Amino acid sequence: MAYNFLGGVIKNASSLSAFFNPTINSYRRINAPPTKSGASWSPSSISYTGNNRTHMIRIPDPGRFELRLMDGSANPYLLQASVLAAGLDGLKNKIDPGKPLNCNMYEDHHKYPNLPKLPDELNQSLERLKNNKDMNEAFGKETINSYIKLRNSEIKEFNQKDTFDKTKSITRWERDNTLDC
Image (cartoon, rainbow, N blue to C red; front, side, top):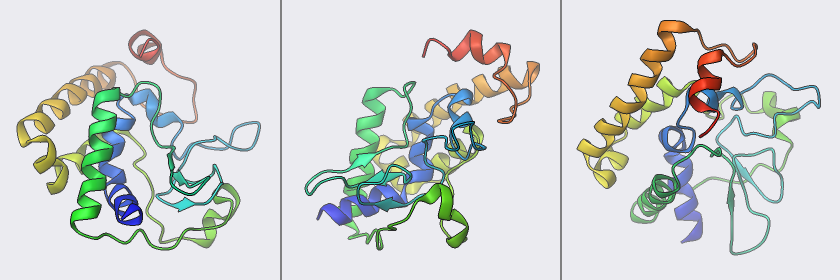
């Protein structure tokens, strides 16, 4: 049962990113270029493993898992509700998460070219959420559309002043509008 629950989270990860990473600034850490320390300590691919922090999900001990996708700006209620909705989808449809990858994803990502990547920007995750039948059913289409409308208004406001670029410092708009999330 737990692996089916995990399978649902993995299947829906790109859509869940819209809830887990709700700001433009959130996507600076996902699929980010290497930092001076050599790692962003954030997932980039949709994968799971044992006790290894380079994957989106790690299973450090029997009976629990750590989902490492969300950032501190996530709404805790939407976060928990969306994990449950995805997990229940996995249980209902008996989704197999596949085999765990026992590697360092920061070093070995090139060995898995077909592994799904997480969205690079907020608008990508919102598009995936919009088209996710299971999440629309779980939350209701009106709720999903309202959430997407809110986030798209932020993207529109940002795009009037700036351009998102992970390789550059955060923008003034990001500091003014997301620093206190």
